[in-house]
Length: 132
Image (cartoon, rainbow, N blue to C red; front, side, top):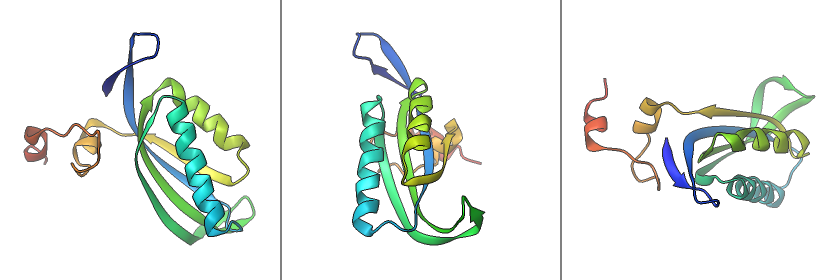
């Protein structure tokens, strides 16, 4: 967790999250990029900071979801206050381009195993050498 200054002068605890989003397969590449920008800006507007976006492209689903057999997989790595997660989930429920999503809070061990070049990730040398 990271302490960040809130707009009212207090401190907010930011957690690290991993977010997998499935976008509709009928979208064009431009629409997928627009959706990624819209999701990223929504995270930022709600007090978060997007650290990494990984577009896996259009893939076949393991099983049918919401009458879909294909989808664009997009992975977001971000940090945000816990209070913003509910808002992000509500946004996904009404955003027509998203048909499935999952947000996971990362543990300290998962945070320590992230690549150190990702901006904003506090990885201490002692944590890296003490991995089992």
